Image (cartoon, rainbow, N blue to C red; front, side, top):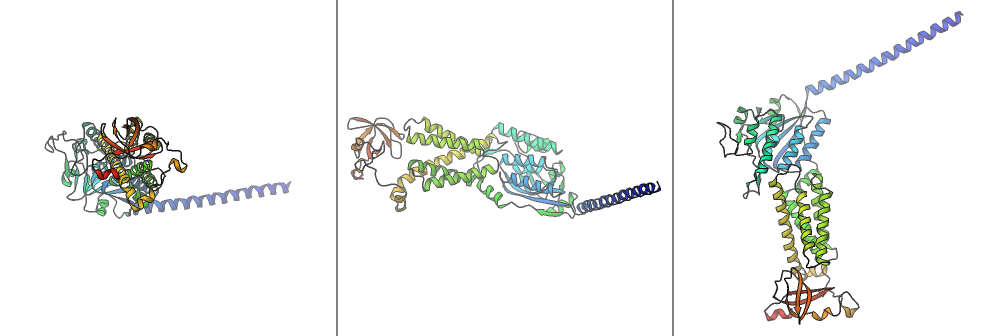
Length: 474
């Protein structure tokens, strides 16, 4: 019995020792974690981290994902703030709206430092930040939406002005800034007593912005702006774009994207006119591929736009090869291509002015592509390297080919009269017989003299007959 009592006491003592050891280890771990957290908090408090994002030049769609990525990185790094170093005359409204939404929803404090000027779209971005600091001699405002480019701009319609005005007002209300001043930057009909008369847009200098509570602070530099915002001695990390973001900004530049559209459409039209999927088709597909890839990255292009453009190209090919002269398929194809490309150029929050401008760019690109196609098809066969790209050998019936009916070959070099307008397909009368023909470059009106230049498959190709004698021997 004594043995059992001693064993029981020994077991109880061992259990107590184990519990004490476990408690001691737990206490040590908790203490270490507490010291570590305290050190991190102390380090963050003593040396705050601030990410600086440059907003310079034209505001374009490539800036929106760059800003969103930087704010995400700042949040993960536990940064105290993200500062936007702004010096811009503005740019795209839809790009500014996307950046405005990102700033209003930012989990990290945002500071705008207007380093000289925040005009037009730049003003909306500056107003969207929690703290607005301006350099001495800076300006902010003049944000009326316009149509056209530099030197040819004109005021946008009332619907566009109304939309942008309310975006400015809502942004100012969220950031506790005077909303009527934000509206006056957009709409010349907004009048503020003793500040701006009706009929004039509002642009504020630094001192005026501070006086009317549009700006919060004044500072001569980024470091001084951080000091004024209560972030003295902060570790400044300058954000920079990745090569992909830089490339996307290049591809979505209005001039570059218009050039890519023109080259893409030109290549496809030439390939359709001279099938063989060689150089023109490859260049066309590559250009359109770069165009859609860049706009896909900035979330403008989607499957709907791609499908519309593809359908449009197929309809144009159908008009050329299967249903020449009907024009319905061709018109529907052009409309689908213009609509698809136009949708790719506008984003969420786009005003009517932006939409009209986008459709105008697509129309110009299409016209340039058609003119370039016409010129290339006239010049290319005469060039040494062009002859290598164009199949010169005729697949004639007497050589074993049967694609061209033997009866059609009798019309070669015959002269007749166009019965209907050839745009490019229509009807001509040759030697008293009505024949379906296709014009080889350019439209031919009804009643004009025409000459058959070649027979391709089931197509009888004609040109306007020249009155000059030497042209009859071409």
